[in-house]
Image (cartoon, one colour):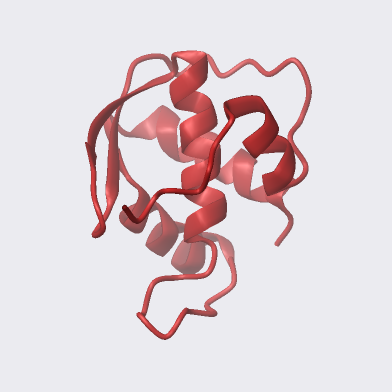
Length: 107
């Protein structure tokens, strides 16, 4: 599944939920929307990094606020469901550039 499609499903999920757990969102994307079931040896879905990167972008844009971030999960509260983007984000690299991430999700 392409990142653009993931983003559409994530946006829909956010519209229906007050809180967003990255792990629960991954499960939803896999079970309800056909996202890849591939996992790391730790059991974490491989889509987790793309999901958290997009959620961090929405955090930066003010759509979400951070509730918790640790090795187990990243949890956000929905502040605004009006998700407007100046341009679609196609790759995790584009998200990283916009958010200035260093992929320290697991620290």
